[in-house]
Image (cartoon, rainbow, N blue to C red):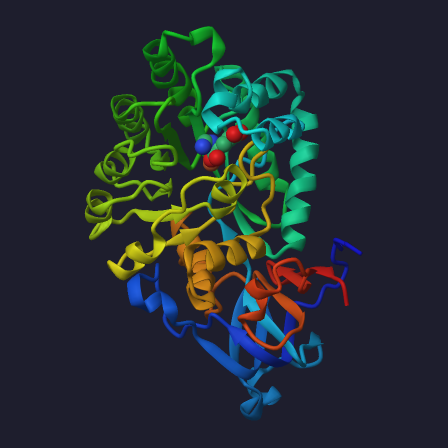
Length: 431
Ligand code: NIG
Ligand code: FE
């Protein structure tokens, strides 16, 4: 049973003892993990972990635990994690989880053989969500998003990026971004907000794509920036959506307003999106079903995190991104959920781990790095989240009793998360 507790427990310190494996520990904070290094994860067997206020204070092996050294007195909560693993929270660096309703009708169209682009051309897809979002009130959108956030918290996520992009006019885009702002203020999870006005060309601009791009640049971006409603800017740079030229113009305008890029690229074709993203020093380029040597060479040596969205490829039956080739070439890779009503109606990062292992031949250690520290990088958070390191935010989860780290992606349908701690407080306990 799912219980999200508003924690009345006021102890400022939590000591987790007898941890079978403390996973993804770091003595020195690294911003991202690339290439061969992705196959390594720091693990302490039979460990303890001390949380103080909202931060990780110390950790070590049980045999060396001296309570007197920790100066914790009597005012601390003790959790016995015998037989259990402790992981840093998942960081989900790409979602669209503010949306109205659901799109299971298109699910049937997909089953019957229509492609994502065909569904979009018939007014389904993003435009379908856009119509519903425009009609929904800010409160309705907020309540639906809160429900989704509670769900992903119970599934181990401790930080999430959320995009606009179902508004597609100035008023509705601002409404979405204000909902994200409210979520930031009220939810215990860390949230970053991305302006995605160029997600799709709205119906009333059909045949006048450049006019819509002008609207995004001249009207939307200035207000979004002036009201400080976004941390990042995104464009869906792909076949049938926005061109490299459109993307270039929008990212330039975003940059002038201090918005760093995180873009959708190469989901449906070799779109040139990776190259234009790297040109603007994008924090991440996401999807990447179509990646060849040119894209890999553009990414090598850049500060841009290639981000794979295995849920969308699974749900839409897309090509699988050549992740092994990217890692073997020395690139870092991040894995996010893309939680949205059309192409990935799930924000379950543990399931994304399983998909990444099976469909992309990633090792469990690689998917741990890809869903924690590398996604933290992809939302500008790797100095404070994504690993168990002293001084980082105390966002983590304790599993049920399980045998190994590999068991997490292996047991793909099992709910293995027992206790969730966010900001140093227990917010969920199914024990
Ligand atoms: O990331 N690819 C573009 N946008 C979303 C899909 C949004 C939708 O279909 O509603 C994605 O998959
Ligand atoms: Fe997306």
